[in-house]
Each structure stands twice: as C-alpha cells, then as structure tokens.
Amino acid sequence: MAEAEKASDSSGGGGEEESVKLFVGQVPKHMTEAQLLAMFKEVAIVDEVNIIKDKATKASRGCCFLICPSREEADKAVSACHNKRTLAGASSPLQVKYADGELERLEHKLFVGMLPKNVSDAEVSALFSQYGNIKDLQILRGSPRTSKGCAFLKYETKEQALAALEALNGKCKMEGSSVPLVIKWADTEKERQARKAQKAQFWGSNVPHTSPTHQPSLFGALPMGYLPPYNGFGYQHPGTYGFMHYPMQNRPGFHNLIPPGNQGNALHGGPPDLVSTMAPRSFAAMQSNGYMGSAFPALPGFQYPLAYPGGMMSNRPLGNSHGAAQPVSMSSDLTNASTISNSSITMGSGDQIEGPPDANLFIYHIPQEFGDQELSNAFQAFGRVLSAKVFVDKATGVSKCFGFVSYDSPTAAQCAINMMNGSQLGGKKLKVQLKRDNKQSKPY
DNA sequence: TCATATT
Image 1 (cartoon, rainbow, N blue to C red):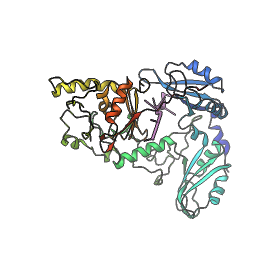
Image 2 (cartoon, rainbow, N blue to C red):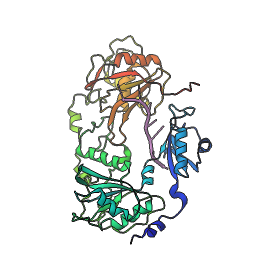
Image 3 (cartoon, protein in one colour):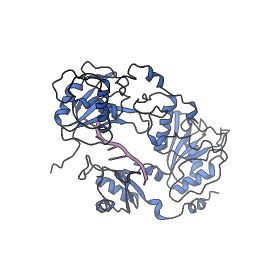
C-alpha cells in the first residue's frame, strides 16, 4: 500500500531538485560575480554565482557559492578548479567543494532508531525494501550479534526515503521490540558538530578560560553564531506526526517527527537544556590570581619565561639590543606602559594580513586560552605585528594551539624566532618558525 | 603541526 505518488507530488517537481550548490574559497575579495561566472563557465555549466558577503559591510568575504544544474557539472567544476589554480591576490589555491549539507541533501539518508537489539540486516532490508531500492544500509552494532538499536539507510531517491519515513515512523514495531521504529532524516554534519559543541559545553571540560579581555560569558568559547545554544533539535515536539509539506528542494532542517515518549537514542539524544545548568566559571579564579589588577591582565596562565625578552607591558625591557622593543625611558610606570600596549592591541589581531616573505611566523604550542589578541601581545615586542591568528576549532570554539603572526619585516620575524622559540609559555615550550610558503607559483 | 570562510 505504499503510495509513492503522494510523496512525489509534494516535492514540487521542478528541475531544481537536481541542482547542486558548491562552495568556493580563496576568491579574491575584489572579484565580481560576473567575473567568477565567466571563469567557471569555462569548465562547467554554472547557473549562478553568489558571492558571500559580510552582512554588515557588504564586502566580499572571500568566498562564493556556485549553483550547477547537476552533480555531473558540479563535479566538473570541482575537479577542474579545486586546488588547481590560485587566483591573483589569493594566498592559496581555489577551494571548490560541495556546500555544507549539500552532499547529505543529495543522499536521502535516513536514520532508523528503536531497532531490536538482535535485528539482522536481512530483516531491516526486507522491511525497507518495500519502499524502494536500498543503496546502503548500516546497522550500528556493538558486537556482530547485537545492534545498538539504530541504523543509517540510503535509498536511490528522496521519494523512496520519504515514503518509508512516512509509512514506518512511529507506526511499525519490529519483531522483538515493544516500541515503534523512529525514522528521521539523518543529521547533517553541521547538526552533529553543533551537538558535539553543546556537549562539550555541557560537560564543562575542554573549555578554555574565558579570556579576561572579553566579557565573562557562559559561552565565551563558542562562536557568536551559536548563541543561544541549540535546544535539542525537535525533542520537544511531541505529537507532531503530521506530515509537513516538504518544501520544494529542501528537507526540513529540524526533525519533529519523533513520537511522544520516545527518548531518541544515544547518538541523537542531547542534554535538553544547557542554559539552566551552566554555572559561571573562572570569574573568581580571575580575580584571585595575581595578575588581575596588575598590568598583566591579558595573559592568563602566563608564566614569565626565562627566555622572555622582557617588556610585555609592565616589564621593563632588559636593555635588549634588538631595536623593536619600546625604549626604556625614565618611566616604567604602569599607566604609561598600558597605554602603549593598549594602543597596539587593537591593531595586531583580526584580519589575516600577510606580511612580506619571511616575515610570517607559524607558532605551535600556543597556550589553549590564548586568543588572537594574546598572541599578538606576546609577539609585539619584536616588531610591528600586522596580524595574529590563533586557529580555533569551528565546532567547539576550542583553540587548536597553533597560529600565525605576521610582521612587516623579516628582521622582526627572525628576532621573534630567536627570542620566543623554545620559550616557556603556559605549560609547553613554544615552537616558533617561519611559515611555510603556501603560494604555488607555477613552475612552468 | 602550516590558513579560514557556508548568503
């Protein structure tokens, strides 16, 4: 009694279903959509180019989307361009890939929960084959004979997947189970990452100290976009069995198809509410540590390195011979010192300006709690810092402990290497070296 | 352990 018809007419029937969105990185900010379109049209059919712009300033963010009419065309664009050529003004080759969630959108992947523990592939196959050809079935197992109660499943078409979802979700108990199956669209990568990030927050582990240069925030470690945190996709929509009209090409972003009383499953269950369980952290610690209120506020966990060249804010430079540090005049007075550093604080971080060749540093073992600003501060004694960037995990906001510092001169960079490489910052020894050259200049 | 970004 499977009515595949019903499914197909709710999906609009436009040819758009087939089109594929690609993400393109390393696009020089000055390029126009028309220029990009012309360029990409040389290698594939491209319907549209959309430059991704800053919401506020409308300036290009250095990347764009391409809309291709089919996967074939999209793949042509990817293989012809990805990592293949560097546009004038870019620092590394074009990055061309499926936009976030796009691959998954095309995959029609379903999540199946509440499977019996002892279910076999054959049983699941038999049940789901009623609705279409199963392209891929993966039952998550603890051991060969026991399932974890869930599976991922792909059909050839979205209509088939939708038919199975509508026919079985909440309505079908498999032999050996007292609860009905739960079927939903599998989470996208983004949803998984968001959930992971939330879990990290929840457990309070792995979260760097809130930097004293920012307002203390419960979510200081997360990118702004994650505020407020996800509240558990669709977990509180009991009773929504109604089939929403699936809009044209996009499946719903959130899943409200879980029957009431169903707890979900280990993979998809998340803490329902984080906000109320979060406790402010690290404020007291900050106030009681010796640095707070001194002229050393921006460097939590900083231990005066023996090798440290002096001059971080209030410290009098050690009469060093490299001309970069502020000259020591009669005053090592705090007000004066902090004025100096405050004025340079605002310029060194943020944009990723590259300096001239050999003026850019790669730094590893940066203390976890350092942000761009702290990195910049730590390196400003050796020359003019054009930019300082600590890399951060996109999903969790946690520092990856490496970053880049760019100076305006190779001399400054070399000086920083001499003074900072191997010095003790936080727990580990800093590794400071010249950044590898990324540009692929055509050998021929 | 060497460069992001997803309207």
